[in-house]
Amino acid sequence: MRISSESTDYRIYRILSDKPVSGEKLANELGITRTAVWKAVQKLKESGVHLESGASGYRIIGEIELNPYKIARIAFENGFKEVHFYNETDSTNTRAREYGKPNVLFFANKQTAGRGRYGRRWLSEEGGLYFSMTLSPPLDYSDLPKLTLIAGLSVAESIPDAEVKWPNDVLIHGRKVCGILSELHGEVERPLVIIGIGINVENSAPENGISVSELFDMSRKEVFELVLKNFSKNYRMLLSGSWDELRTGIEQMCSTIGKKVRVVTSSGVVEGVAESLSEDGSLVVNGRKIYAGDCIHLR
Ligand code: BTN
Image (cartoon, rainbow, N blue to C red; front, side, top):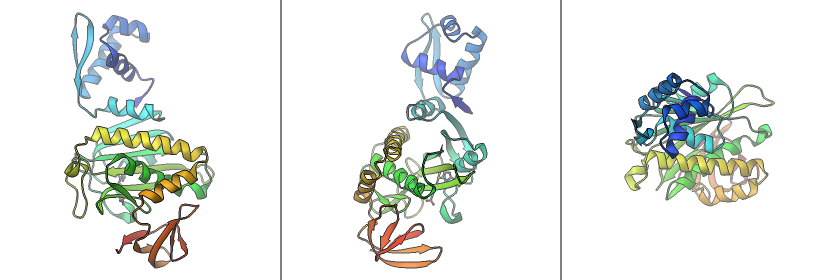
């Protein structure tokens, strides 16, 4: 289902989140018929917003913690214009690419064909977080990899003990809790950037992975809200020219730095000590800049 901040159902959700209101008042306030109000209320109910209608009007008496309207509220508060929610889809990155518009957040409770980097699969069972954000940032093409890095930073800032593994994984105690798949689509001058984030939260993580709930008492909603808040803060910083500050933050949270690594790049395998994150976001290994690759921590 698709939710925009102007849609009737979302506006009613926001109004009723504050206080109970009668159907008549809602109809007047939104300039719609009572039937339209009733229909929107049914939509909310079907999406896990529990409503009762009493003397004071419609009242929210509870809701599924991370229902589509809550997701939309969090997304809109952090700069997105539209949310597409799926209980199940193949891959939110694929949905995002098909839709092709910026500032949209695609969210799925499970994915049947979750994709990872290098054609790998991303297991996407219920209990994890799977979402993709589309952006059309006013940045040079060469700056776009920084978006993946700030996405990793944002996730690491949201989960205790988390660290960034260059270029786009987040680990807890050396085990993978989150993977990020960034893809570009459309015009080279102003491409659509798709940032897909998968986080093991309440699902059981695959071998060598870890789930947030194994260690911390955090719900999917809490993790999702923190990641979006941190991403929106870091994205604004990037656009306002504070990359240096962000780079320092990433370096501090990046467990790759100082480790012996093996990076498989398109032009060969590089092995050595990861020294730093350079100005352009590349990893410096034995004095050589690496822009992209599959990185393995050796020790
Ligand atoms: C990786 O570790 O290789 C990246 C994994 C990225 C998984 C996320 S889940 C949401 C989005 N949709 C996908 O199909 N993949 C990304």
